[in-house]
Image (cartoon, rainbow, N blue to C red; front, top):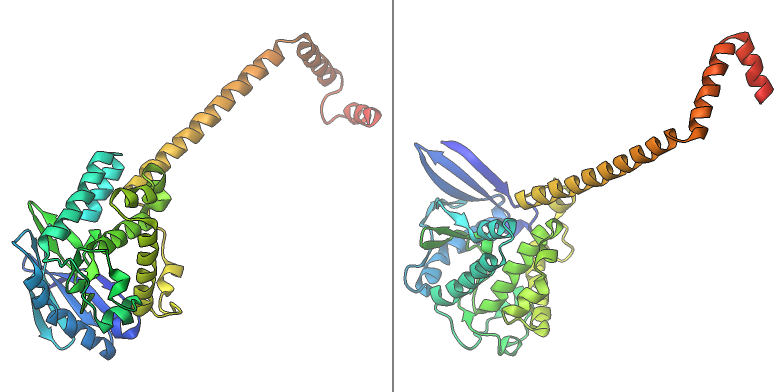
Length: 322
């Protein structure tokens, strides 16, 4: 077997630390998830156990889950799915500066969440929602439906692959009893997509606030979802974020849209410098055409002839001039 890729989630709290790897065996690829420490074994076991309820909540076959098998107590094996993530599709639309395609992809994503899952109109309460998302009661979710049940936090852009007309949810690590609003998943997807691409001009091209409003997220709803996501991050990484050392040592990553923007910026700089050089050359040419410049050149040549550079007479002249 050949190891193609591996990612360690050691920046999480220990009970959630797993490694995700992609392998190839006789031309066939598969994914392995392995608990990095003994404390993470229950988390991995729950990931497997929650597969059945998620499959039960799916409607039709537009969205699928890869098959998963238990290798041992610490390891799960998933079928590898070919395809492109919705994150990548949005990135392509941004690269082409195609707002219509960009918005259509998001609309398809929202429709997929609403159609592929058996949603409920009213919130379903659980103690896990209070523990993970800091929600005090079902009233905190009132009016925010429809709702996904069980509560899936994973159907983000990067975790949904499109292969032809089929979609696959390739990661469902975070599943809880109760329910979560479909709009909360949309908020998380857009927020983190923008966070990842903000340095490449995405916010300037299409502001996030306007996009959230376009898809029906009011400012007070956004504030509530921000608090819910902050609580979720604390649940995974710890209140003090002591395990999130990775961000402090993260290497700079440049995406293709970023490279195009960088190239265009450098072209503008070059054009600016070229214009300044042309202007300076014009000024120099005009200066050389003046009588004062021509006289100064003649005087300079006469001095060099009568007082050669480096000679005693030249040094005497320089002292006299000083």
